[in-house]
Length: 236
Image 1 (spheres, rainbow, N blue to C red):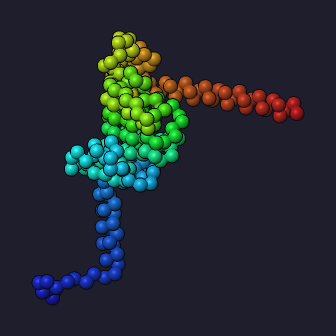
Image 2 (cartoon, rainbow, N blue to C red):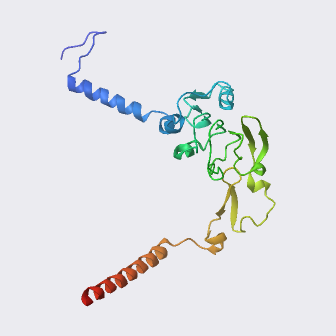
């Protein structure tokens, strides 16, 4: 076998070079950060985060965050800030839930029309929200520590945990626990071994019984409809 001199190059056949290039491309695609999966909301509006926006100020406080398109991301690609101001939005859009991890969101200078009450369901990390001056902070003023109105914007700051701030001891049943679910929103989660309305039913929920009843009911209705149609066909 011929020995290869140090520093000499190895020539690969065309098929081997193509296979190597394909393998490297797949490896890079799998190694792409999570931001690539969330690019839709970050690029929903053209342009970049404005230098003086709340999102930019928050993002530049540490070198571990980076601005990309309309988002502020951490090193793992998680969205920490979203700047969609002046994007002619009547509503944040279907991809808005991708930013549920955001701490700061700016939606000012948009003609928002819809009620924002359920738009921020699941946005439990949100602490600063900038809205148009005529918009209402989701959950109302009681869902935030401070609500400040300006000529061109309204800032909702310091999201309250409704589970801690509510005075209603019966807001969740005895067998359930209160969990925050966004500004002014909460959900009651049943403890282990309980389910159903107000977590009053004990034991695990039986899918077999549920689908058994559903299947038998569907079968009975199908037989009834088949018999009715058959009678009509005979009499006609």
